[in-house]
Length: 316
Image (cartoon, rainbow, N blue to C red; front, top):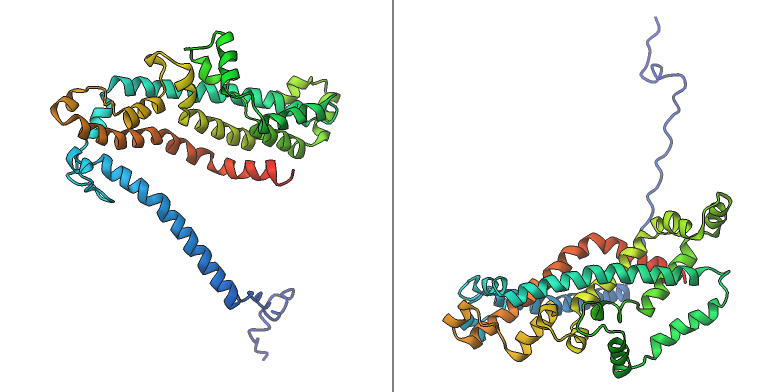
């Protein structure tokens, strides 16, 4: 009688187990590396505190009473918690009009700027463009030298753009730095074989740009759109120079009036409290309100921002 052992019950094609592979040995950090990394983390934590502490102070001040804000008793936590500052901001007509104007300038201005930047950068990225080096030199020259404020003002006035919305959008519609980023991205990330294949299929240059280049350039478009959008949202100097009608003022110019001119707009709440205390509280509340749109938009383009900058600059 034959007794089957466990080894005999195995499938005939089962291979015997071999020795387990050794785990890859991790490189041990030297004491110098550890000290260096500790210094890096310490420096990053310091920068984080430098950024977060003022932000926390602004938010806490916006949620505190006017007397506590004016008395300097607020640091990182609200004192006499109240929403009276946000109520005053959201019921101030000048602030609401400025908020709508800033949304218009940032939205329309970003669309116009991105469209013009692509229209300039894509031809400059093509090696078969006649006079390409001269045109790129002109773009680089505009990064270093400009006509100045007075000539620019005279041009805007000659074009009849003073005291219009286009005076905020058109003079700053194109930035040379964004053009260079887009040009480098197109040159390094769009293969020439795609253009040759499109030509064989009978596609025109505009069709190739619209159907092939732009869909492949979403990271780039997110990068330059974020740059232009934040620039338009935070801009107030152009409005200060070119605008006269308060109905066209952006939010940042209204914020400037409250910060510098100390003009709270004469709301009912300001009549009940001391005008100076209410103005101090509205400063912090308006700062928080003006940063909310940027904080809401940035998470959606953050991953494209990093990817687009790396593809558009490192390979160049």
